[in-house]
Length: 237
Image (cartoon, rainbow, N blue to C red; front, side, top):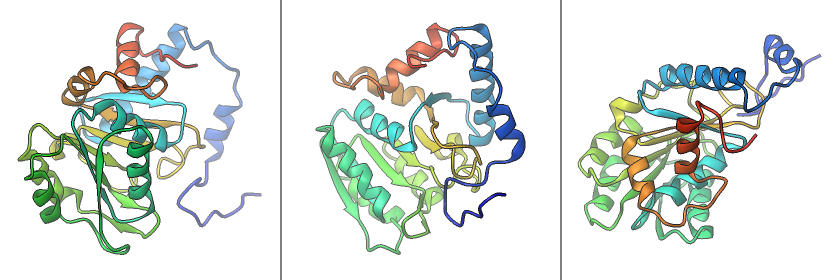
């Protein structure tokens, strides 16, 4: 008997998915693995409305959030927060010695396009993070209004935390100019926990190529290079 989970995630996993998880393991360096992971990427592109490459990571969404801010910040990150998970993104920057400033609003209120414009107009920042749906408060930030503002600053990498919204809310990555859009498996996608996913633009990859210390496990450029070289096989198992 299923428990009813009245939480943002983990969410209910359907029987067909559970049955699929009971099948035998496959080798992670086989053609079967390449085909599986390529197929996942192709379907995610449709869900995200993007032509950008898709990266997968055996982690929670926080893994790729940390990877984004560490891999792609050359100068300084502007972290916009309206709750707990925005604050965690700022802490990730601090813990990885990434120069960053936090712009936090009162919990229960959204970050506004006007505030983003004021911050980016200073010219101090080359990466911005925005939480699409802030789980701690239920606020959904107006990413559709923020996106045209970020486009005014072509040097800025636009990162969006869509962990608790992608698949439940329409997010048009390419139309919005989102460079890195991050989600994970256990929320709206209705899958078990343990898989983080993101889209990444060529602009973000080019920024990462200029960052010397990107870490190892969550180095987005290393992950990208591996799947290009090894036909959608990943550095980790």
